[in-house]
Length: 257
Image 1 (tube, one colour):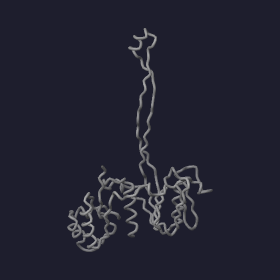
Image 2 (image 1 turned 180 degrees about the vertical axis):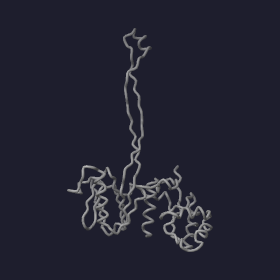
Image 3 (image 1 turned 90 degrees about the vertical axis):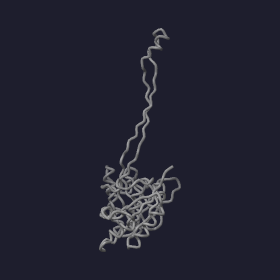
Image 4 (image 1 turned 30 degrees about the horizontal axis):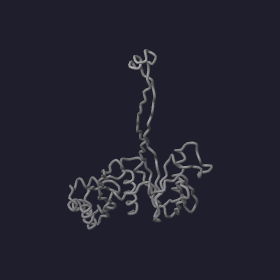
């Protein structure tokens, strides 16, 4: 049975006040030096994880009382790609975008340009399992004896399984309109919407798509920590997919800016 964790997350910290770190550390039961280290980065900062949601809720209330903006995040409620539009087709115009996953009868996910609040670039590891069946002939002394030397070999079938991980860049488009997020994977997107700007290389097309989205929504926040840093690797184990958990936390933090 999967055991979910509840995270205590800082989305905004009033660290300019004298003695604030010490008071916050005492309120949640951690060493001031440890808390100061965790608060050194940019939000969101995960302070602790616990399977007891009541303890996390109590710590959150204590931090909120000191002027922090904290969140208790239940890892069991973190959404994955099943709740997003994994876009295969994309259309951009001056008013916004339309994305579809290419499913039969699917209605496009339309997002107005002004509703785009966050663009997150990252990389997800995708496991691919390959099973190979081979047949070869091997010398069989037993068959040779039984057949008076007429049958010297026998067929032997072997099965081997290998799991490889490939890293696939993605771009999450988060909107404030209440609809599902849209996620674009570099090698799954049909780039024909780029028209004359379409290039032979997938990487170049993905970069051009990112540039077009930034131009479409200049007011949207852009976060690239998941593409170039240890943000995901630094998250505690919770039972949730680390990439999906990181995206959830970045969305929460973006709304506090």
